[in-house]
Amino acid sequence: MDSLLNWITVNQQIIYIVVLMIFVGIEVIGHVPSVLHTPLMSGANAIHGVVIIGAIIVMGKAESDNYLALALGFLAVILGTLNVVGGFVVTDRMLEMFKKKKK
Amino acid sequence: MELNILTLCYLIASVTFILGLKMLSNPATARNGNLVAATGMTIAILGTIFLYTDSDGHKLHNYGWIFGGILIGAVTGTYAAKKVKMTAMPEMVSLFNGMGGACAALISAAEFYHIYRNRQGAPDTPFHELVPVGFYITIVAGAIIGTISYTGSIIAWGKLNGRVKDFSFKGQHFVNMIVLALVLVSAVLAYRSTIGNIYLPFILIGFFAFIYGILFVMPIGGADMPVVISLLNSFTGVAAACGGFLYDNKAMLTGGILVGAAGTLLTILMCKAMNRSLTNVLIGSFGGGHKAGAAGAKQQGTVREITLSDTAMVMAYANKVFIVPGYGLAVAQAQHACHELEKLLEGKGVEVKYAIHPVAGRMPGHMNVLLAEADVSYDKLMEMEHANDEFASTDVVLILGANDVVNPAAKTDPSSPIYGMPVLDVELARNVIVNKRSMKPGYAGIENELFFRPKTSMLFGDAKKVLQDLIAEIKNL
Image (cartoon, rainbow over all chains, first blue to last red; front, side, top):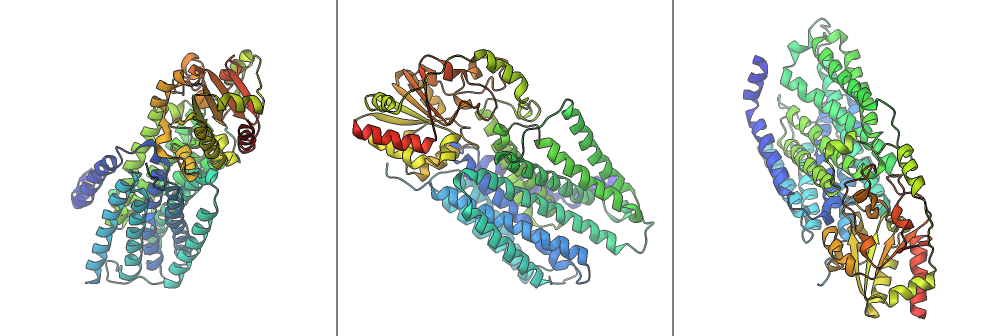
């Protein structure tokens, strides 16, 4: 218990970010029209691809003889990139179809 | 200096993520919003590669591996995303989501291994002496949530493209609970074991989470997949945020939590569109064919078919026509033919509108995207509430490959699995013409009594072919 409380104090900055981001996340998409549900989901999907940063760090820190870490990191980088690149491209293709029309 | 620039990169990325999501929720700015977020992401990735230093001041190495991985991922990702058909986009999103989940899980696995490897020499060291509990929770949560998101997304992908069939057995929810409990028990065991013994519990965590992801999605009906994908999407967001905790990385943290929160809200909005609660979707799964089949059997009546020329006649001389698109339209890629019919009828002085059910197709907004591709103007797309006010004054409703969203059983039959879901009140119109390929039930696997009503007539065939023939008929009138 003590160590958990201690951990909260040490990481309070991060915990503040988490709490505030939850509110921002809810607020920011609160008024989305149902037309955009699918592209929004797809866009959000691309954004959580930010996990690739973690993969790059794992990969870049791995000792050159640590083959398991290298393999895990390499696979993680590939999958993360797929998520980011594929996610943004698919979203763009969806939105491409929402060409503005003269009313 | 370089580290400060990296901090700035992450700050920019975080802001673009928030801005991007904000812009994505408005039709006028959506596309730019996507680009803004993508730019921020690029900055964050490049910044990490070139500027990151760990706590000891070491820069990253293994550049060959990093760039190789990014190259493979980027080429494959772009190719898959460019090639995928409109109808298969929901599956694609699910697949990419699964990749993100797997990535988060692999990061946790690598971190675990890192700790393990550094202490290999002292196998008797208790694991919890090395790792504070908060730190452990973030690693293990990333592994568990990422894995569940991965297997769940793959199953959802398989269900949407028909490779995986709905599957449920008696007491499945009980079994699911047990598996989830086993995941948590393994996580506690891993924390309490010594370095020498940690392998087995850690593998068990991954194994049970893997199984849980499959069991979690398996019994949920295909019609509810959009909700599930959205939920798994927010799971992956949380898993990414765990990585942010792990590396004290603000960009990962903001991006992950933002998606976690927004994804959860989006999931709830989707459930609301179906007038169901999230628990109802997850627990009260569509129970397969047995009960629904029996209910459908007694409703079998006579089905009236209509010829193309009659359809052309009825539509050309109507005052007001509503088109109700569904998944069948997407499968047949008939959106352009549909738009052509609309223009033709307008030319004859018929008022044509589209009634869009919020969950028509495989994902909310699916129909809007599809019709927008064919240049159908926004003002013609009516949301369900407004369309329902107008059906009583409508001459012809043309249903193109939609089924469950026009099933009156949702209003009248409490035993129906879709009871309570708001539907389009198409039966109020003077004529209802239903285009379907066959009498097969829709995605929820239930019969639709609308097809047996006296005002309804059926026009069988592939939506695109039927529409093209219909256009030709109307031109000949």
